Image (cartoon, rainbow, N blue to C red; front, side, top):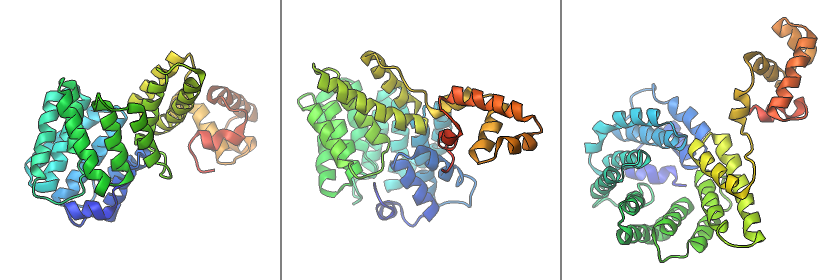
Length: 331
């Protein structure tokens, strides 16, 4: 990940809470990041660079979850900052490029990424902090400009291999695998995944696992299929836990091609519970006995038992011992 030193070196002195939220977003801990970042939205006024970093990191999380309405609102808030000079304006332009790409507008995305690159000219910052070349490369692929796409992706890889973080290297390798028709994508993706070994499981790792699985499914033989399934289950667990529905949808489509059923994620399971079942489940997860729950909710013990039996069935767990973990509570 890019540490606070790299961010502050490019954007100036920023609050620790903001840098922490940004780090969580880059690590792919989307739920935690949104809690931290949303808590800063109404805080004391930030400098322009801080506002841009806050909005851009929040937009990244919202796009990962498929929340396009929220992302568009963040884009509107970011728009006035695109004219700012240097890395601050570049970060705003880059965020708008990502938004345009998510909306299926590669020409507009390419313009924003190119503007981000121009704003960074003459600024000596970590090339992985605003990876505009990678966004431009993916936009170029969608525009049929394969040679340009491969050039941009390779250029970014050369830059970050000397100065970038493992995350920046993995991101560049993944983009080269996607854009360079003359490359060996399987080898590049394995290198990308290996560069993230030892780091917390995050969104980029899950994306690479899914890419690898898709390629392995094209390789004849049981070994490739078995590895693909292992990778997809790992990505499925991560995407479901962080509620990254676009990635989860892609994983499930690949599982369907393998003839494997998807596993219901926590958010989907909880949505199946009634309000009464959720109240009973939460109290049981906090350690209350059935009698204590009945007293708390002013119902009979039999009603509590009835609700819990439905909770276990819907959440597909055997007993209350698994409730806390399933509900996402500390255990």
